[in-house]
Amino acid sequence: MDNNQNKYIAVAYKLYAAGEKSLEFVEEATDDKPFEFISGFGFTLDEFEKQVKDLQKGDKFNFTLTKEQAYGDVEPERIIDLEREVFCINGHFDHEHVSVGAILPLQNEDGHRFFGKVLEINEEKVKIDLNHPLAGKELNFNGHIVDTREATNEEIQHIINHLNSEGCGCDECGGGCNDGCGDGCNDGNHDHHHHDGCGCPHCH
Image: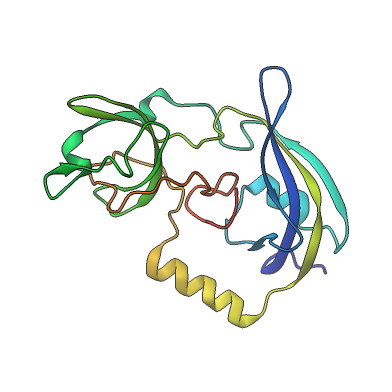
């Protein structure tokens, strides 16, 4: 398959992040529930796509991305303090969803949606970390290609419609946030290794 654009690619893998002394397991995409994407749309990290796009079904891979190729350094300016009132529903603080360690869906004044991790809660402020959870870490992917083929016109059109109608911002942590979390989200299983701005299936 010579054309690397608009390829449907499904991969199974185990993802590890480099810790201080050893690799730390992050997540797994299985043959039954692989990570799926179409190349050329920026759905995953550029270097990840580069590593797998030329492989054939059944091919194995084992590669490591530097933090620069992945999510860069942790940026202190992406750790912000928001007023507690932002997280109030009907005048009451949302204790059910807003707790230390919770991952919250947020939205900035431009309408871009992204996730933030609650670091601290006090009487006046909620400290939120907008850095990607894997910022500052090298990432190791060990897996194989479940399927690879030319994407159908219907699959491509579905992606284009989705991008045009909603954007994709599952993981877009850009800009200040002044809007609350709506119904909140206490699930840490949001996109990890996907490119900023798209993909909510696994960790890309």
